[in-house]
Image (tube, rainbow, N blue to C red; front, side, top):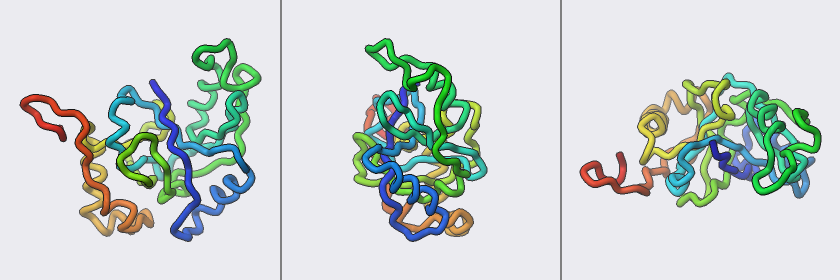
Length: 195
């Protein structure tokens, strides 16, 4: 897997559920805070339209002290990261093998509706949206969404766009989903560019 770093931006909708993230961003100072979905398809990142979390999932903000950054992910994946070597070095992601500091915990619900800066994305800003089928025991518990090349991503984004009651259930506002269209990135002969 490759971790994709989606930078958390200052919450912009005045939602009370973002109070813990606002506090974390203030305490972090110049340390960036990232959601880190794991992907096998990093070449598709140009087509990101949003990021998914499991509303009932349990997430943490973990200090990755070797690179002075904070990653939002599941506890299981944070522990795994603390045992990994940084590419091109003999150093681990954390100063002590197998140990990683959790700065804050969140439910997925508390992370919904957060604005993110997705690397290489066509969109300047994307939002964290609910996905009810995430397995917290696979990857990082965070899923980046590229609807042009992942049918599940397309169906999930379309459901949020087409169902106002579904958006309302999770306090997702129209501007978090409605302006986002499929971004064609890979063209396959006989299938087109949004397969």
